[in-house]
Length: 325
Ligand code: ASP
Figure (cartoon, rainbow, N blue to C red):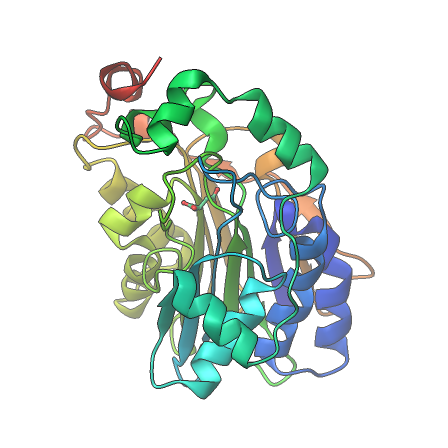
């Protein structure tokens, strides 16, 4: 038995451990651990209280995957529902599809009786209001392009904070899940990697599981979660597989380049968490395995892309080129 969540998952760890000890299915453990994070307004990058998009709407992405069957489900740009990860699970269980987005996802959430909620907390509303300007209102009303406004201006690191959970239950079954409100002030309709199976999440009972956080645009481009699991399939250890995926990301050229954190585990319970940046406690990860009295938090291994011989990124340059202000 093992559960691994990232730092955002702190508030969900007790529930995940309880579910594991109670012998729940691996998918139930994923939901049990992620629900408290989705409901906690203090976690500003997941569910209720998450930062809104440029139009002031909290749009959530989530995914869930069963390692045994490799069945999976995901939702993107879902607004108005508290537990995106559970809607993703219903997509997996009730539809011949894997992924629903936007209005279709909300319609389906209603159909399966998912918990409705106003997702914009008072704090997030204030945050949004403080960033309004006459130019942005013009852009929002369609009188000028909105695109320049979604390039992060305040901080390169607004693209961080999905919660991810990977687990091995009592029966040795692997599963994983993700849930996020995505980038703060993203372009409406933008999907990150969290709902994209193979980018932000991949689980295969035979070889291992992987989930990614931070700049989803990069892990989508590199197909990172699937790449890590495929590397394990071809004989790499979980650690070697994560390093190989990081090295591959260092070969990305142009586009938006930022931080990425890779979380992975093998079916035998070996773990690896690699981060391109050191954000202190923010990037630490939580884990518990059978026999531990309590769960622990550990800093990730730092693996800066810049140290790779292949790195040719220019993050500051790409921002200067595109930023609105
Ligand atoms: N990966 C997420 C996204 O791109 C954000 C994050 O994990 O911080 O939406």
